[in-house]
Amino acid sequence: MATKQLKATTVEPTEMALFSEAPQIDGSGRGSEGVSTSDLVIPRLEIVQDLSPQRKKTDPAYIPGAEEGMMFNTVTKELYPTGVIIVPVLFRKEFIIWKNRQKGGGFAGSFETVEAALHALSEMENRGDYEIQDTHQNFCLVLHPESTAEDPIVGEIVLSFSKTKMKIGRQLNSMIKMRGGDRWSSAYRLEVVQATSDKGDYFNYKVTPIGYVSPATAALAERMYEEVKSFRKDISREAVAEGAEETTY
Image (cartoon, rainbow, N blue to C red):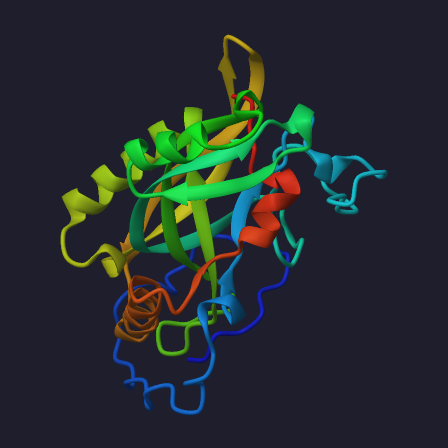
């Protein structure tokens, strides 16, 4: 039941997330007492859009084979061409200051309230180069297609919902509330679909419930929950600073 490295692959919905008998996780993480938040980061899952730097060969963020509509891991650069199965673990609301892409882009701070973000922005030089985005951070497990109920193979990712993605985040929260239990009680299929706004066509997420997770998967999710809640793990801000997170939609 260990966390294993995910590989880019096509993921098809299976019965792997459904309940079955499974052993409990042993150990309390001894031996890693000296590992701090700066040593443990969780990558983000993002969508390649038409103008994403992941498609430009001259950009440092370029990913060979990246095509619009694919999901990708911001740390490993792995591509997910069709979809993944996620288990939501923890929700966090943030107000994030981004530097506009035309001015170099990048992460400039995260705050619990809009008031705190506005105060920080007011003290920045060239504050017109920045904007505040209301963002829903969803810490999740990703289930590998070779997982079984007894032996789940998982990775850890963050889904960041802002702007037009916020609608999908609210839908996910509503689904979780309707299904009941802990946030990680159910698994969901995450896909990419084409959408339209007043700025043109783009790609967005689609979320569909699959079923309740097995005790083994729930145990891994609960462990991630405790690590993130206590800030022993957090989002990889280095990957965010590359500009992969920004969307114009």
